[in-house]
Structures are given as C-alpha cells and as structure tokens.
Amino acid sequence: MFVILDRNSGIPVRKQLYDAITMKILKGELVEGEKLPSTRELAEKLGIARNTVVEIYEQLISEGYLETDHGRGTFVAGGNEGALESGLLSVQYPGGKGRHAGTGNRIDFMTGVPDLEAFPRKAWMRAIKESLHEAEDDLLGYGPALGYLPLRGVLSQYLMKNKGIHCSPEQVIIVNGTSDALSLIALMFQKPSGELMVESAVVSFVPDIFRTFGYSIRPLETDWQGLCTDNLPEAADGLIFCSPSHQFPLGGTLSVERRLQLVHYARERRHYIIEDDYDSEFRYAGAPVNSIYQLAPENTIHLGTFSKTLAPFLRLGYMVVPKKMSDGFRELQSNMYRRVGMHAQIALHLLFERNIYSRHVMMMRKRYKRKMRCITSALYNEFGDSIRIFGTNSGLHVAVAFPEPLFNAGSTGIFLKYGVSAELLTDYMIEKQAACDTLILGFGNLREDVIPEGAKRLKTAVCEISARQMCGDEL
Image 1 (cartoon, rainbow, N blue to C red):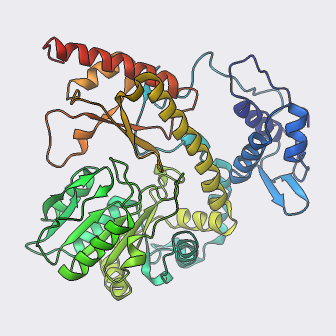
Image 2 (spheres, rainbow, N blue to C red):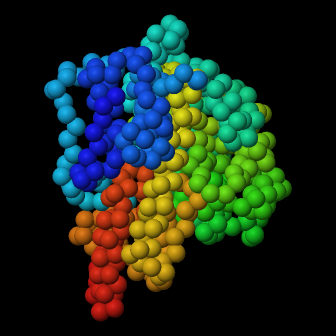
Image 3 (cartoon, rainbow, N blue to C red):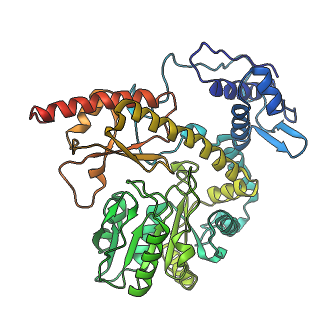
C-alpha cells in the first residue's frame, strides 16, 4: 500500500493517513479482501508512531472500511470499493481552517455533542440496510412496546460486563433519548403532590419535563464532587434525579461514601432514584465506581443514551427499571403508543453483535482522553494558576472556575466578538444568579489543533470582561 504523508501541510498525520486509506478503498484501489500491512510494518514504513496506525485501523474497522481476522491480519471490508470513480474526488483541506463545530470561523465549546466526524457512517449505513432484511414482518409494524428484544438482550449483557448491572432483558426499555425516558418516569409516578429533587445545577429539560407533569422542583445542594448527601431534606415518597458518573455541568464523580449515603436515605424515605449515567463510558482516570443501580436495584431507575457514544441524531437511549416495575412500565408504554424506530434498533443490535459498538467506544475513549489533555493544557497555558479546572477524569466537558464572578448575560456577546462561544454555569442553575465565576466548556466535537486557538480567544475575551468590570462598564 503506497501512501505519502506531507509533513509540511499543517494537516495532522493521523488525518492524512485516515483519508489516504479511505480514498483508496472508495476509489477501488484497495479491494475487498485485500490484506493491509501490519500496524508495525506501516508505522515503520511511514516513520510514525505505531499507536497512530493502531488508532486509525481501529477507527476504520468501527466505520466498516476494514475488518480483522484474528491471527491473520486486517483486510478491506466489502461494500465500499469503487464507490467513487477513480480521479473524481480528492481529499482537500481548507487552508488554515479546522473543524470548529460552529458557524464560520467561530470556535464553539458546545457541550453535549460528541465527535461527529468520527461517527461510524459506513458501519451504520450497512447495518441500516441489513436491518430491513433482518426484520420479520411483524416488526415492520409499530414493534414491541419495550423495544426490540434482541437489542434489549445484548444491552443487558453489555451492562453486566461493563457496568456491573445485573438485569434481565424484560427490565430494559428502549426510548427516544433521555427526555423520553424522563417523560415516561414522570407519568409513572405522577400524583397531585409529586416532587422531584434534583441537583442544583442541571440541564434545563430535566426540571422542565417534570414541571409539565405537575411536579414541584426542589434543588439539592451540589458541589464539585456531585450531589451533597450530608443534609438531605426530610421529605418522603419522591423522586431524586442525579448524574453520579460525571455530574453535568460541574463535572464531579460522586464518591462511594456519598453514593451509600444517598442509597440509605432513599431507602429510609421511600424515594426512587433516577440515575442518569452521563458520560460513564468515557472515564480517563481512577477506578470505576459502582453505579447507584448496583447498590439499590429495587428503587433505582438507570438511564443511558447513545447520543454521546454514537451521535445525537439517532435519538436512541434506554432505561433499566426495577424488576417489580417492569410490567407497569410495559403497560404504560403500550397505552401511550410510544415507539422507537425499529430499523434503528435492529441496526444498533447488529453493531453490538459484531463488536463494532464496543470497538468504537474504546477508540473514542482514547481520542477524548487526548482532547481532555489538550484542553486542560491549553487553558493552563493561557490562564495559569488563576483558574481551577474540574471534571477532568471523565466526559466531554470541563468546568473552569475563575477567582471572581466575572460572567453574566452580557459575557456571551464579548465571547462572540472574539470568535468563540462558551456556556456559563448560571445557565444551568435552577435558582438563577446574576453572575457566576465558572465557564462550562465542551470539547467533544472540536479538533485537537483548534482547541489551543479557542483557549487564546477565551483569554482575550476574559481580559476584556475583567477590564470592563474594573472600570464599572456594563457588558
């Protein structure tokens, strides 16, 4: 396989190699079944790190361009070759521009968005096509209320293997994302005096959904380590929402001690815990911590989503409910005629069955870990010890605390003036504040080579905000 890397182009070697291999496959220069060089051989030939080649091969396998045969090597997968006529398409790089995940030249530190460029398009398209052949006639209707049974089966196995959650397929419900799951829970527990206790900083749709169903909202104290469990209210028979794996937006991971306190409190007061397993797949440091569901399966509802591990457009998520409640949720779901598209469920099942999903998550964990290092390094380079960065052990965002409450509604305009966007902690506070000292920065959909420039722009904007406040000027 002949590949030339241009080290003077300013384009990362990883990107050049990825594009070179995919173009050769799409043009038919590499055909189905053709064996590729080993990672060691190709790395030595190109004079690059073997890890770089390993990561590219893993990405191409997850996207359906390549496939492996254990003990024999890596081969070109079928269904891609000749998709482009040779010579009609070449890889073009916009001079000096990176993927900013924004508009124009703006660098957007948007939260909640994964690396969309890395979505395994080929593997997904192939699975979608095959899903029509896999589907029995009855599945072409509205489908089962709880979701495609084979998918629920592989999910229960995946949860046991990767999260230590023991549940049957009957306890797994496929939903249209987290908001759909929350609506279902709100309906299940709805009563005249219903109350949702929730972390004081949270994504706004959580309390909004429960308010729609008549619930009152009680914010619970939350700090950099997650939900505070020392002084929980005396209330009983309610719902508690928390994100213990990677609290959004503050970024903390709930300690074992706090988890045990929360579980004891919920049992004593007859509460149900809604555990949003936010970003748990992307943990970069420290040993895994038991999920709340592991500790209290009888009164915990565990929520998961594929929006971060794959892409938000899929609108696919799941919930694991206590065994005693599975019949009730099935009946409610049936009566509501709420269904998730069967073709997407069957396709996702195929990704699990072929180990494509697990390989993709593993590859993305490595990629996001590099991005996490990149953003923390860039921020400290610009701001030094004047800032504190929280939430660096996992996830696709960080919380950056400054010494003073510099930021208010007018700050957004200053950021945009310098070609960057950032979110304020106060945007997520249930009890709103006029100003805050913390920025919430997402990096999942930003390229590594763009992040340092984004940090520079943030520094310029923060300097202007600080100067204006010192002069008493309004933002």
